[in-house]
Image 1 (cartoon, rainbow, N blue to C red):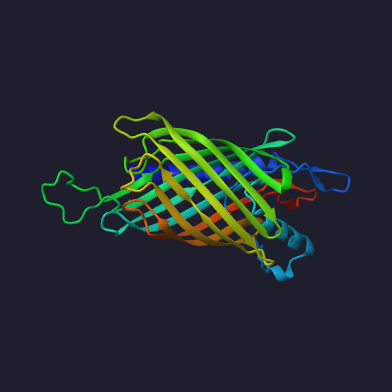
Image 2: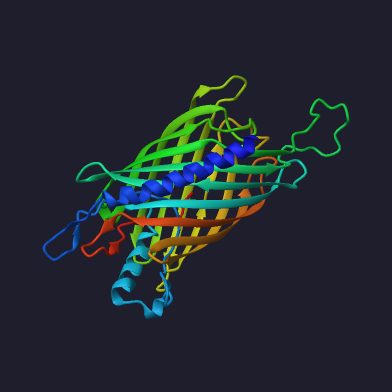
Length: 349
């Protein structure tokens, strides 16, 4: 019954996001000068590594070789912007992760679907607020299973599988619309962790808060930067432990002439309250390849990747894979209805 309620709730949430997004986009007209060029283009923040090659056919798809010069120029601009986390694009990523090697037996595995809507809001002539929320839906098995336990062990009966919603992370990035000295772009603000876990093994049981920051530099087809946050518990449910956790995500991306992105990153976490015996750090190396497609008028980003855990806590994972589908909604339109993307985005979780 609970799983059915979760599925229905997530479906309703997704449909709500998709219904609101076009309305938000429509209420953000672009400013144009006397030559019909966009001016005053705000930047927003999304952290997702992607790349772009729009294609259509005679009906709704075209290969890049037959694109018009305007479409090719737009694709090139979008591909470069997708390698930059500070951008002005409304996007709805669906990121699926499968990780193996968990638990005392080493046979545990965990599936996580992150729904990560990102909405940029222009708050002044010089500043944007980027609202980024992560809803994790989790199905995990044998993460806490001990084989060959005595029949009367106090750990019996063992709960081998847990399914439901994990804690929700919401970040607020305040970002200047123009790059700083040496072309460095950045955004910072608060991050909040809400105790939305539907099972004690799926969430922390705490409301936590802390700072978050992203900094990057783009040169030619290369983009390098890092995103971080540090969370501390401020409200703790009964019988739960406090949280003090660092998230650090360095990334390096390269965009080819065919608008394909290659991204090398890490999504490392440090649990400062863990003991040295159990291990504090989880350090995956993640390699991803992304490509943008255009289905009708809708741009999407498809991305695949693999993970290898250089370090993980006791009973932590060994390796994993990732697949991501992102719906892209450029926030600017030029006269005549032609969309012009103003976004710079890299796939960072």
